[in-house]
Amino acid sequence: MNAPPVATPTFTRLPRHIAIVMDGNGRWAQQRGRRRSVGHRVGARSIREITEECARLGVERLTLYAFSAENWKRPKPEIRFLMNLLARYLVKERGTILDNNVQLAAIGRIGELPGLVQRRLAELIDVSSRNDGLTLCLALNYGGRTEIVDAARRAMQLAKDDALEPDALDERTFADLLYAGPGVADPDLLIRTGGDCRVSNFLLWEISYAEIYVTDTQWPDFRAPALHAAIREFERRDRRFGGLND
Ligand code: IPE
Ligand code: IPE
Ligand code: MG
Image 1: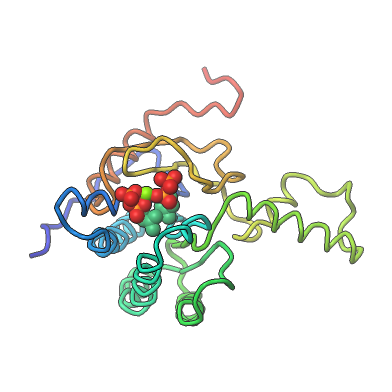
Image 2: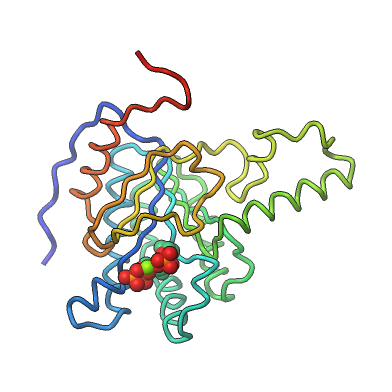
């Protein structure tokens, strides 16, 4: 049975870009005597609900940490399960994405993912590219340090090709070389579920001034009301960016 629809509240200050470390799937399942994979499957439903809610609220970008560059250290069967779940997600959620005017994007070393995932990802990115609502960006085989190294490599290549003067490289031009490409605003709000107070190599460059919100709620339980609570907390934060507010 589906949960009753939650009324969409209004917010006076909505984050333009929300990034989420979707953690706690395994523990959620283990606490219920189930296999870790069950937690990942229920977590995929949270992805759907949070995507729909962000689209409804008018959030511009939602970046979800779905598979880190370090997650290859996990047991082979869990990696295989996650990659299959992702491949199935990209077919099953096509309707959710298109019906909600969502544009799909991805960051990370995408070329190292299984071929089927790459093809389905490219297809859904392509068919959703004309949408102009929420951008849902999946971080896949993503590492923050790797992203910075890859951007530095691109900068060096541009310099070698005489397309960039070393002195012309500044924070703006460097940020344009990150995976998401030019013109993407940094996350305003970084949420981590599962209770661990760490960033686990997520968006190291981009979160320099993000408001950080850690909740003990595990990702499979993180639904619209939990998102609203995070945004309410964000509204209470005094963002100074190193300056002074009255
Ligand atoms: C997050 O849940 C999902 C991925 C990292 C793919 P975990 O699988 O890390 O769950 P916990 O942290 O072990 O509970
Ligand atoms: C972070 O969770 C990665 C994703 C949510 C995809 P992890 O479970 O991999 O992080 P650690 O190992 O607890 O730092
Ligand atoms: Mg974890």
